[in-house]
Length: 153
Image (cartoon, rainbow, N blue to C red):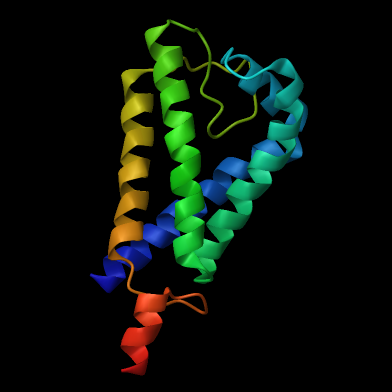
């Protein structure tokens, strides 16, 4: 089980680092992708476009490096629980937009589809698996209190 958790951590960590790179390099495009959802006030989109990719990057890096993995997985879980309803909203209201998940290109081809919803829902379940199953194996630091107590026994 510990190797499966490690594989999940490496996969999700790599995925979030990959997803953050284009957004970090072009925050203006990512801000437009955020505005396309018609959910956030326009005044908030720039600050979200600047900060969110860095949070994705750091959380992904922490998962890969095995540092504070529970906190990193919880941050990613939180981001996904906010983002998934936005995806579902865009899909069911018929917004003809790209999700902005792996590219900052606000006008890129690729409308949100059922496959997009399934992909991101699957990612959420993998992160949930990490949160539930991670017992602190292969972590550099930051194993939870229960894991630290178990090691000290």
